[in-house]
Image 1 (cartoon, helix red, strand yellow):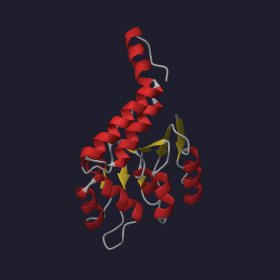
Image 2 (tube, helix red, strand yellow):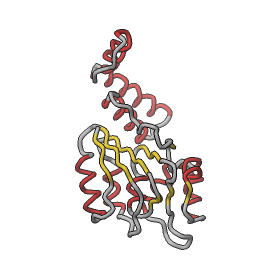
Image 3 (cartoon, helix red, strand yellow):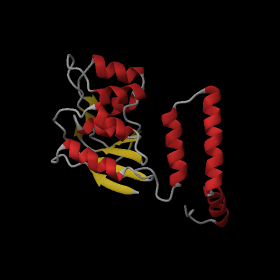
Image 4 (cartoon, one colour):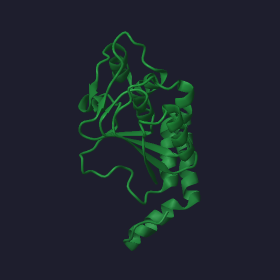
Length: 202
């Protein structure tokens, strides 16, 4: 598990390239966003590869965010926010960036309507209610995921979420993933650790 911080003082494209390099291998990368932005949004070409990273990406929003940091955070696999977090959406009449529209589309119609038709800063409670933020944490809560989780299982779960397959295709994909995880051996180690009353070693 890698913990990093978004460096608002660096060129956003350079900063995203650094994060993307960190996220090329399977694992978990957690990025703290302390606030800021106040720049032009990054292009979809830059953010699209971020949405397809091999590592599971977790954003921790701690303050008010605007472009381009906001788009990078909202395009993470899991978006967490602390008290005081706020998203500074573009004003009505300004076309939202493609990455922001992608994040809103992933969240659903209410989030899309809020981004397209309202265009004022969005508070933490509302961002969570419409799905732009996935987890609201108290100041003292640990940031997910917990230490010691199976990276293979976490990555497989994230890949299933990204696939958005349904009905027969979704079931077939789920079964194939289930068989893969058993072949890796993590379920056996999890069961053994439970029976032996010890933390699992993945």
